[in-house]
Amino acid sequence: MSEQRVRAEKLDATDELAGLRARFVLDDAVYLDGNSLGALPAAVPGRVDDVVRRQWGELRIRSWTESGWWTAPERIGDRIAPLVGAAAGQIVVGDSTSVNVFKALVGAVRLAGEGRDEILVDATTFPTDGYIAESAARMTGRTLRPVAPSQVPGALGDRTAAVLLNHVDYRTGRLHDLPSLTAAVRAAGAVSVWDLCHSAGALPVGLDEHGVDLAVGCTYKYLNGGPGSPAYLYVRRDLQERFDSPLPGWNSHAEPFGMRRDYEPAPGAVRGRVGTPDILSMLALEAALEVWDGVSVDAVRAKSLALTDFFLECVAAYVPAGRVECLTPDAHAERGSQVALRCADAGRVMARLIERGVVGDFRHPDVLRFGFTPLYVGFGGVERAARVLAEVISSD
Ligand SMILES: *Cc1c(COP(=O)(O)O)cnc(C)c1O
Image 1 (cartoon, rainbow, N blue to C red):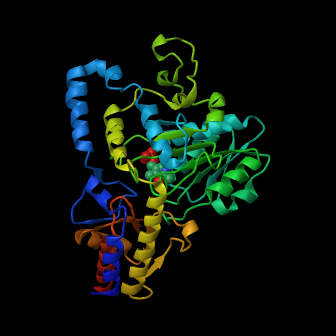
Image 2: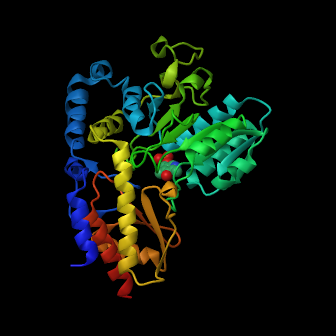
Image 3: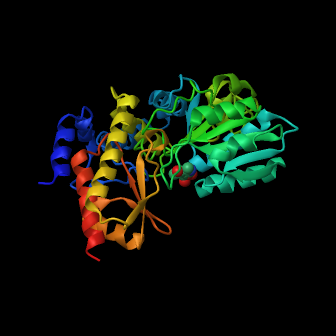
């Protein structure tokens, strides 16, 4: 047995989160794609069955009140809140991340006020954030300026209205410095908008602690909410009264059943709602979030770093030198919960890995992406993934 295999057994034996894997439906595959679609929590199928058969099938319209459907967006927001370091009453769940980026960014420009004519956006952002930012800039008459996150402090100034950044880069897995960038944005008098898609559920975010203004994130990656599960929007409490959503629907009205002609925004996080929430996905997400009961995000972060460290160690030990190049920073302070490896013929390599039960994903043109969800990935799986990767690459 290799030295790494022995180490994996020891690491698994002392892993205080190892038991959480039983809260998921999994098989023998090494599932390293939870940063794209989290695995199915075991409590979800039964809950969805109840929501469909009893709540919808039997209670029908009564469920809007009796089953808590109407208040689900803010109730589930409060369930996500501790995972991203937010006090209750600041997060609302609903719509997609793309739609919430739009609400947050236009809302941010409006909060910044007239006279600030520039929006900064992460130049390496996930495409949808960039497309939406371009449209938001056009609609609000601002200029969009793409900048590398590390260049943001130098690019900030009197003209900056809002800054849209990713906490973790979806491609490289680089973790950006949210506390210091948020402080710089604030010092310039601009409004920060953070996209937490690749950090929430994998590492501490500290939204309240670091004074983040607005944030969005999806729930189907490290939060395991299921395909297309609704996203969320965070509006810091002291900004809520001035938050002017560009999508004011009847669900965010102060009196939704007053059916009034004039729009009066509801107080609090509810102001981020738009129309009728997709209850089936939303309540599947609510059941999925139960896997977090009793779990500390700090423990998750510690295991995440141990997993990625161990993966890098195994890759270095097994994969012939020069065949892969790691794009993910080595420093813990700059690493999310994934490892991105550049590799020749990456698309074909990933297809062979998947055939052999090691599931990551391929990102155009030459990146192998491996996501590590500490709730269900173990060290034995990590060792196996690196070993199979080495075999696939060496068999060419
Ligand atoms: C996954 C992801 C999205 C997804 O947006 P959807 O509207 O849910 O499709 C957006 N932004 C980032 C940074 C992501 O990683």
